[in-house]
Length: 146
Image (cartoon, rainbow, N blue to C red; front, side, top):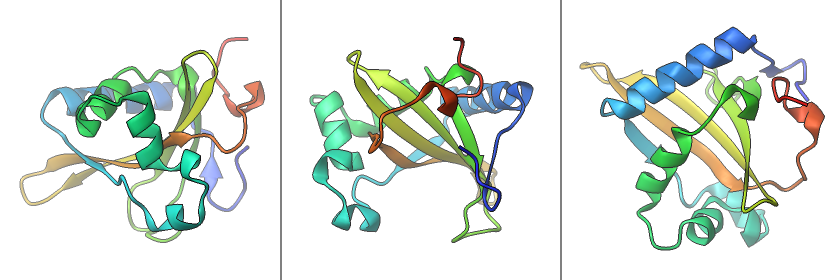
């Protein structure tokens, strides 16, 4: 799954620590920045866009509230890999997760957590929260129980 240029697999302890820090930040006022419409989605089948996925999975909810709730459920078993942002190499790495909804719908989640601003405000950037374009395979999840 990880390629040599921009992706790596973190240790299970590193992933657990990241998730613990993410949950602490979300439970203590971290802002969530969610891009419903992205330039990359212009050439993508609608089903695989953030907007479509959120509207389909959580039709009667505020998208940010739904995303916050879902991020709070992430576990080390959902972890796929850690990716360096090649467009913004000085920014923190992104983590990729995968979850299954409604028993069959694979959803790809890519996030970055950063401290921003002079007051150290934590912001969680949700770059991707959309149906997976390729079905998930067990080998994509290094810490998923068999």
